[in-house]
Image (cartoon, rainbow, N blue to C red; front, side):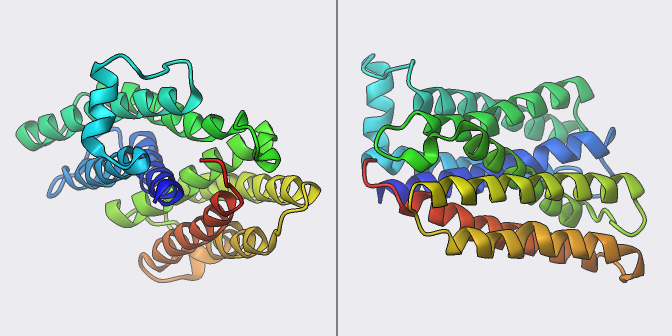
Length: 257
């Protein structure tokens, strides 16, 4: 269960954090009707991810007990990852509560929460850079950039779907998607090179490269000719599926966690 729990945490948590970042970037004021939708989805996804992370040590109660007993090593990358992630979840919950009551929340709060979200994604990658026994992970640029670009790409897609944002009509959104997915393509190529250099199988990463950034780049480029929110749905699905495949392969080579 150990690696699966970490996989679920970084997938669900990264998706949630990335979604929050782009809602903050593109929505100065939340729309009427369902202003709570994005923060609610973010909180649910991230909370489930954190619960999965807690099961990494086989017992959720034991995870809390270790914190209160002072036996946690706060200098460890994975501990810092969880601490920052908890901070993000708390801020996101506060945002959700305020939005439920007032139909919106202070933009300053959302900016701070988005910054913490980026930090949480960054730490999700950094947590694995110094893991002994997995040389393919020790390439910091490839590992961290893949987590950052991957989670942001997934988040951008989910934000567009939830908010009804159109890649066809919103040039800024379309340009952002092109940049994020181009960076993701470079990141996955770097990860493929790192894995291949360590003698690891790279088939899954190659599939992830094709399914996530390549398909997304093609769809975003064609978005002006597509109807409704079709482009956003396809980009969201391609990003999540592609990253899920590549990230599963990332964890599959580990035998020490």
